Structure formats: structure tokens, C-alpha cells
Amino acid sequence: MGANLLLPTLLLAIGDASPVSAQVSAKQIQGLISDLDHPEYRRRERAFQRLCDLGPAVIQPLEKALQDKPSLESTRRIERILHIVRSRSQLGHFRSAVEEAEAILERLPDRELEVRIRAELFEQDARRTKRLAEEYARYDLLLEDALVGLRQWEFLFAYETSREWQARFQFALARVLLSKSMNYEIRYQLALIRDYFGAAMRPLRGMGPEGFTASKLPPLQPGQRAWRLVACDLLQGKAREGRESRKQVRKARLLLEDLVDGAYPEVWRQRVKPFFPERLQLGRQWVAE
Image (tube, rainbow, N blue to C red; front, side, top):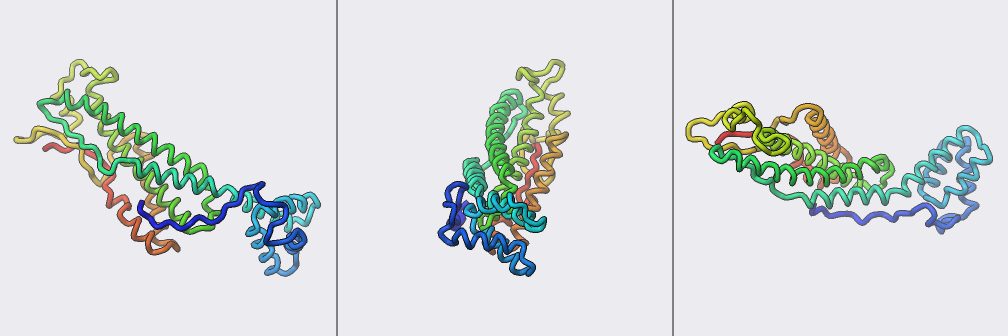
């Protein structure tokens, strides 16, 4: 993406830290755990935040504290700290999913493959749509892999301490969703042409090119001899996949709007503006020429 990326913060995995952190002694950890039940609110909150920040070093002492059956309030705080610390220890997976999605997006072609069908060579050109559809099906598999990875670790978004990584996640997810929607639109229109040949890629009986194009493609005016697949504003896909495609676009828009309106650096506002759906023309349609 050409972004200037911040260096990732240090990640600690469960089991990597020693029982006593180099930053704090076991006695201090016990003191903080005791403060979780302190009558003063600010002291409880400071202890809570400090224990969260200490990371995996506090897991064992907190688990032991739970075995001692503390008060209900203290139990809730301890369980919440354990959840936060364990979730943060998995941030490596979260960031890896973002990097993998970014790498997949970079592997996609910069420009869309041109699709043109000449009326006098309809069957020859239409058969090419099968190869094109297979190409876009491969792209869709790549995008689906990226989407699965991002959604698998999306629950860690709230535990990510770096705004840069949060922004990268949202931007990558938005781009994957938009790319999948555009990819579906192309495959949907190519499928309309392949319908002429049936499953075996042979012309359907009782329907010549003229009859087929009259029902599937815009009419050719005098001087026009071909159809071209072009971008348009409205999504054309139908049925379940078409509805899912529209949902993906709405989700992507929300992600991009948050990057523009949220508490992110100005660089992100500038970076995401070209990706808003109305600027991309995600729909695809056949036009006569």
C-alpha cells in the first residue's frame, strides 16, 4: 500500500514471561491484586490497569487469587484482567492476518481484464468468458482466504493497543470486502454469457446467438458490432450472492467512514478517500458499442 508503518510493539506470548516480571516483583503483583478490592475507586482502577499492562506475568498469580475465592467484585475484575491479558497475548495472530490480507490485495492485478464480445464472432468470444471466469474465481479464493483470516481474529481489534494496526485492519477488511463485491459483479456478468453454452459449453438447443443476446444483452444499434463489460454505479448481481455483495459494500463503507471520522492520523483520512464505493463504480454491466 506504500504506507509508512509504525514498528509493532513488543508482543508477549503466554509462557514466554517469567513468573515474576522484570518490571515488578511478586509482592507488588499481590499488592495490586489486593487493591482490586480496595474501597477507594481510583485505587481499584489503577490496580486494574496496571495488572492489564503487566501482561502474562500476572496470569498465574491471578489464577491463584481466584482459587482463594475473593469477593464477587474482585472476582469479576480478575476474570476481566485474565481475559484482556490472554487476548493481548494473541495479537501476533491479529497482525499476521492483517499482513496476509495486505499481501493478497497486492497480488491482485492492478487493472481489470478487458471483456469484449463481437457480434459476428459471438460464440468464439463468448467461450473466452469461461477462461476469464476461472481467472476471477481464483481471485475470489484469494480474497476469501484473506476475509476468513481477518474475521477469525477480528475479536482482538478491541485489545490492539496500536491505532496504526487498528487502522490497517479496518482498511484491509474494507478493501477485501469491496474487492469481493466487484469480483462477484464481474463473475455474475460473465455467467450470463456462459449460460448460452450450458454446463457442457455447447450452444443450447433452440437458441441461436441472436435469440440469446436479445434476452441477455442490450440491443445493437446501427453501426454497433460488439458488447463490452464496463463499470457502473449500481450493483447488478441477483439472488443470495447479490444480496451478500451489497451487505459487504455497506460494511466496507462503515469501516472507511470510521477511518475518516475516527481518531486516526490525518494520513489515513487521505488514504481511504479513493476507496469509497461511489468512487470505485463497483457494478458491472454490458453496453453495446
